[in-house]
Amino acid sequence: MAARRILIADDDADIREVLRLYLENAEYEVAEAADGKQALALLQDEPLDLCLLDIMMPKLDGYQVLRSLRRASHIPVIVVSAKGQDPEKILGLDLGADDYLVKPFNPLEAVARVGSLLRRVHTFDIPDESSAETPHAAARDLLVVRDLQLDQDACQLLRAGQPIELTSVEYRIMELLMIHPGRVFTKQQIYEAGWGEPYLAADNNVMVCISKLRAKLSDDPQAYLKTIRGLGYRLER
Image (cartoon, rainbow, N blue to C red; front, side):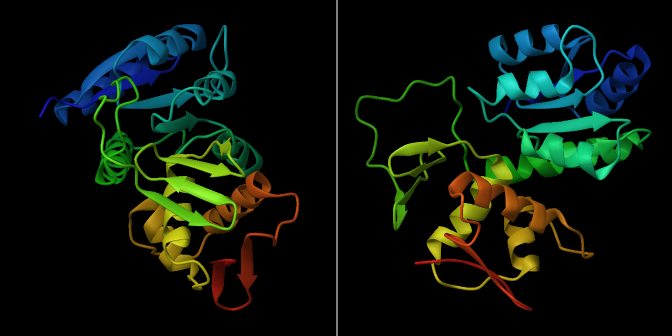
């Protein structure tokens, strides 16, 4: 299998050099961008598997890059930023980032997060968006709950026929809930399905993700995803 190709988008040449060294040592191929405009051009034109995206960059900042990218692509993105407060993290995740790494960081942790995210994404066989669908494609796998329809082949959620943009984590959570409508899932079960790793400590990642999904699904926060106090969450039938 060809090596996964990672884009490092950061205006700090020293950070790019260190990340490149560690990623190449882990047998990844690496592309680099020194500003947001260059990063967005590479993300739109090059075959890439994941992006490490800085926020404070010239020409376009990371939030602008992420916002533009998510209009057409679901490539995994790890935001790498010195802005480590909760509002910045929530904004990055809300715009479609899959993970958030605060500077300064251990390069080995960055490589570990890259590997973890790629394993999660490719476990679900998310198709390459650049590949054309064959004329004789197999029938699509669909999950339907009320007016929600999850196309498992295209990894796309529709509500009343209208597409809803999801991050890869949000997609996996919706897939879990739509396979088992009406079933209550704990935070641990949702975390392990969405993030693909053990739930080792209580945090607000699941709560934030559920909140974002509710906002995307309906103006009524309990219309689809209901909180079961002391237990977890369920998708209403």
